[in-house]
Each structure stands twice: as structure tokens, then as C-alpha cells.
Length: 301
Image (cartoon, rainbow, N blue to C red; front, side, top):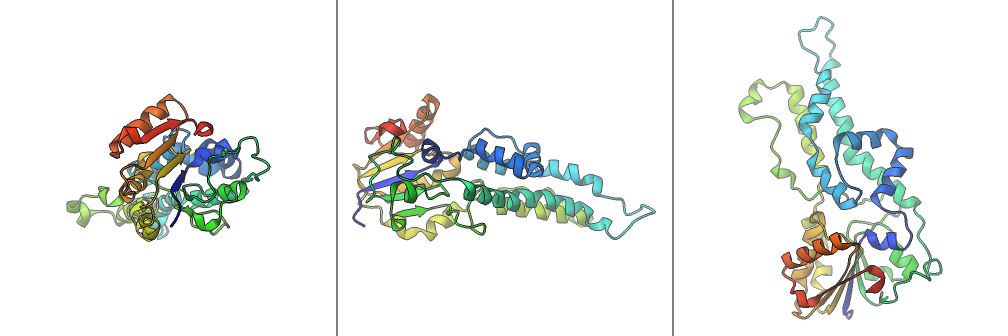
């Protein structure tokens, strides 16, 4: 690879160029497209209007709360009007909620991304970032083709680390960074012998939720090892519109390890003073010397 510059692109880049791709925009879309899913998200999750906050909140899903809500479907085996169908009602309710968050949510996300209008080079003429180098390498966390459409960046120069929305079948990566192996089961081992099998099966379904909504960053990095290994010559890294939050921090840790030059400059955009404070702390934790880092607003890089 001959490129000396790497651009790391987050959703703030798309928003700057007039694409309504914020999490609040997605939530508005859901309110019209799937009000039931929107209601369930509000019921089971608490988050701010940022993608990183929402993704991390997926790890805070309260399985106990779901079990409590679904327990009305745990009919007693002693009921006079017992039906065999009662044996599956509880698990059905658990699975309905879990599927909404692990499958339907991602389908709605893909559907929404595909509806977004990506501006052309002409459309962004008054907002074009002239420092964006078409010969550079790009690591984008966005699902859109803004780089390719608006900046004419060649596809071979762009890695969509979490996938790209090309069709409704596109496999986009959305999730939290908390490893599901760390989850404590709702059941204790000593209770398994006397456990209602319906509760055991419900707990297993909830286990699958945490696995399905986990962002397998380590596996993604391994699958793209050639890309990260090729970054040794990079002399400048531009981070544009990315929150550099905990949910994606492993990628920045990998970047810091992959860049062997002790003089590589990091140029990082920020949105406001809080953003600047957070980014400064994060970069310090990554071990990047302060003299190598500069911060500025996206349009002033």
C-alpha cells in the first residue's frame, strides 16, 4: 500500500453532509414504520440520542424484567383447563421480544439505510471537505456509500468495517461490546433439577439474544487482518465524525497497534466541548502522545 493517509469515518461525517442518519432520525422512522418495535425499545431500553449509546444499551437488556412480564403466560400445570399449548406460551412471548431486538431491529435498520439519499459531488459542493484525499485509505463505520458517491473514492480504498447497505439482505453489524459469556444465567445450577422447563427454555432464548446482539469486533478484526497489517506506512490519521466510544474502542486499539511509526499524526474532529474532553481522555488512554494529536471541528481539519 502506497497511501500515507488513513481516514476513519463515523456517522458525524454523513450528518455533516446533510444525510439524516442520526439515531433520532432512525427512531422517527420506526415510529411510522414499526410503532410496535418502537414501543418495545422504549419499554426495555434507556439511551441517549446517539448510536453508540443505543448500541451499548443493548447489553443492558433486563432479562429478569422480560421474564416477569412474560410470567403471566406460565399457566399452572394443575389448572383444570390445562392445554398442551400452554407449555409453549411463555417461551413464545420471550422469543417474540428477543426476535424483535435481535432480528427485526436490524431488518428495519437496513430498510431505513436503503431509503437514505446520498448526495452527489455537486450536492455537497458548498460543504465539501477539501482535505479528503481520494488516494488515501478509508475505514468507515457507516453503512452508506457517501465516500464513493459524494467524493468519488474508489471502492477498493474503502473498508466498510460493519458492512454496507446494498440490499435488504445486507448483513449489517449492530450491537454491544459486552461479551455474552460474562452473563450470569437467570437460573442457579442447584435449581436446575427442580426448574420449570419453561423457565429454562426462556432463559436459553435470552442467552441467544445476548449472543445475537454482540458485536464480534475481535472476529471482524481477524477477518480484516490484511487491512490492519497494511497500515504500517500511514503517516496521518484523520478521524471524522466518530464518537470513539467504548462500543468501538477495540478498533482504535488495533489501529494504534498497527501503526508502527512513532510520528504518525492523529487529526480528530469533535462536535462540542464535551466531545473534545472525552476524545482527549480516550486518546490518552490509547497511549497516543498528546504532541501527535490535534483536534478541530470537521470543517476546519
